[in-house]
Length: 235
Ligand code: HEC
Ligand code: HEC
Image (cartoon, rainbow, N blue to C red; front, side, top):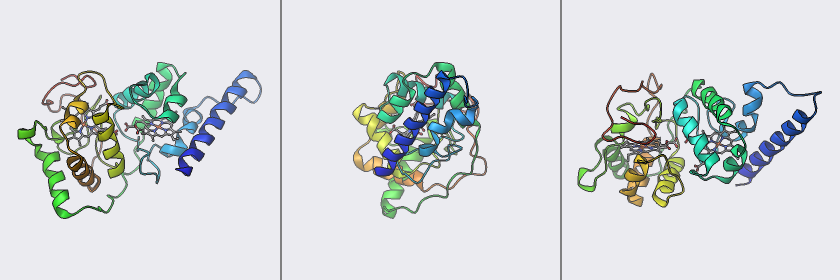
């Protein structure tokens, strides 16, 4: 918890310094992308590779359209995490798009899969949900949208690799409780609404054990059809 606030404090101090410098003309820092994302890197890593905090997500290599949708969602309050809501509050769309493009174009290696704390049975249940879903409970397979290799699809579907189990369960929980929403139809709200706590634990644990594929890049739009259209990724 402390590390999270320390990172936030340094991000805010950075932005404040940047404002002050912009008001003067002398000593203005160069407006490079590296300078712009300096406020983000304490929590997301220099190239968006993530940090040791299990709730701070990796950004690198996710589709630019997906990252842009998230930045808009934080700025407009559709997705809630106060430090990010605050940081993005006054940033214009093109600025958010440029940051999304920057992190999408970075490709640091995916982290090695984390050892799992759950039983083999729980992992097997997670694998079943991810790869086959559960038709009887109206749960589509995660791979039907996130891709057979779980690498996602441009422009709006993120891959599910290189994320930690805690982050994945927190996001699924946020959709179930309505604190994270996407453009309607909000596919993940529909999917997460059918998951039990036990399903969330199982699928998050299994996803976090997946090794990096040879090519983790999201596949191009239209590579496969989604089971139903999503607001952030029309079919
Ligand atoms: C204090 C730490 C912190 C700072 C500073 C921060 N972030 Fe975040 N960011 C987070 C956390 C935590 C989340 C996940 C929030 C949640 O639970 O939904 C997140 C989520 C995101 C996401 C969504 C990722 C995904 O896979 O859905 C994007 C994109 C993002 N941040 C970009 C940025 C950018 C760009 C900046 C700099 C302007 C920034 N962040 C600054 C902590 C931070
Ligand atoms: C019908 C399509 C669809 C299905 C099925 C689906 N997803 Fe998603 N998922 C999406 C879309 C679209 C997004 C991006 C939402 C947004 O823009 O915020 C997403 C985003 C996510 C994210 C956020 C990733 C991040 O970096 O924050 C997670 C986690 C996730 N899905 C997990 C799952 C799991 C687990 C399953 C299976 C139980 C699943 N999804 C099934 C469409 C789908």
